[in-house]
Length: 425
Ligand code: MEV
View 1 (cartoon, rainbow, N blue to C red):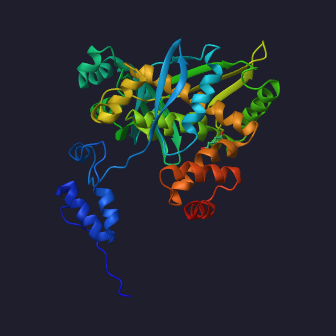
View 2 (cartoon, rainbow, N blue to C red; view 1 turned 180 degrees about the horizontal axis):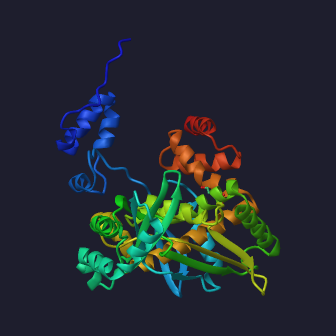
View 3 (cartoon, protein in one colour; view 1 turned 30 degrees about the vertical axis):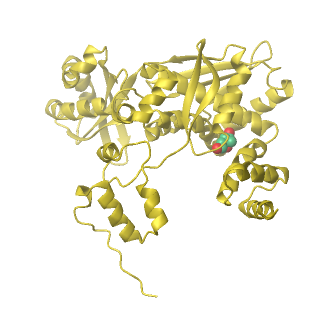
């Protein structure tokens, strides 16, 4: 067999239309026709718009969006749009929310809407003095930052404060300036990055230092979303279930191996709403995990305890840098429509909703793990995917899935043989 040499240097690739790029990609990868047609199929995102959103765009990928029901947040009934490829996630949120609905649902709050931008200064002989020199310039710094974004200032946001830190690093001492900026309904990355870049040469002028990095921090710990809820002990199956869930929490809080999985479950809910609303999943995820490790040990993002009345009380507090203006939240028509479904007219409202979803998700996972185990519920939903994978269509999907669950054997080989048997009848 002759091996063709494939060349990834495609001259002018970025200048091609999406259709032309797809042709080039198909030729490069030797795509069979079915794959080429799949990639050429339109989704509910216009190809021209998608082409403007990113570089070298060739296609879009559709992820199912479901809606979690039964959420009552701060006394108001809410539906949460969630984009996820994982079965059980939306069912878990809906079931968890149902179990605390009558008791009042979720209470949420937000620490503020402030983002942090960092400016790194090097080559300073006297970093401690430099730190104070920077802090003395607070008024000028405020003016430089606010001049970058008069609209943000008109909307009630803008510069809030400046901090300077001396860092001891393997490369020597450096001074890091933090700009604290209220970005209101924007996630704020562009706003604070612009301010950091504008300010850096002035810091060099004032201090004699050499500015290097100028970028936001995703550890958005001045933008913490909080949610809490109480699940009545009778609604969750009694004191045994409650105590098992508390033991599950203690395990996660004490052990990073478990905490990573526990927090991944929280992010199943969080990232699904972040994605559905066109927000930056990586920013929220980076912030969540950095915050979980803020004590020097990676811990649970949620906390669980027993109330004086014996009910199960859960709370979550985590960075939630999401916005409603700018980026895909504004451009992507499906994200805009889903923000309307969520009924959020402020970024704070959305952040608080997401925190409640994260807590509900965590409740669902902990309860399943501490009682029946995760596979029972998960496999029932997963079985449909396996049935589809095995080739089932239409009514066959539910029939095959039911047989797999009944046999407690949810795998594609079993699905194929069940399907073959069904079709031979
Ligand atoms: C699976 O996607 C999420 C869980 O592993 C979360 C957890 O273990 O808490 C079930």
